[in-house]
Amino acid sequence: MPESVAERLRALEDREAIRDLIARYGPLADAGDAWAVAALWSEDGSYAVGGMGEARGRAAIAALISGPVHQSLLADGCAHILTSPAIDLVGDSAVARCHSVVFRHEDGEWAPVRVSANRWELARTSAGWQVTRRENALLDGSAAARALLS
Image (cartoon, rainbow, N blue to C red; front, side, top):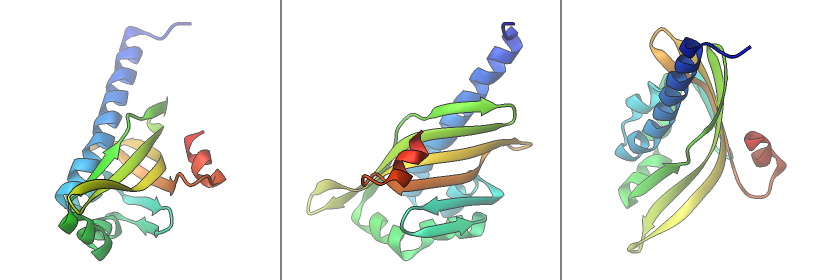
């Protein structure tokens, strides 16, 4: 049976809200706005950065942005670019998959320093859609990175 217009509209609005949330990550990270980045996550959300460990909770996620690795990127100039995500919606939860590239400004040129597969788990909350878990892994030929995209 076809979905109602209201159900289809809600799904479109949900997908747009999720795309917007993911699109906000890069500019906020590049601005160094640690707490605005962390606010994209739920209070107990997690971010597993391949090769760099896992941050749990908003304070730990904010610390990724305010920490020395990210601050070094900011000092040189950086750009976090995320592709448009493929989104699977199931009620009040969703999974989105995309690629990301982090560029660093070095010697007057831009160089990619991290190309990753990303899997975002999201939930609809009273505050809107929020990330409950993000996992990324370098696209280095590993099965783990490919699994995030399937």
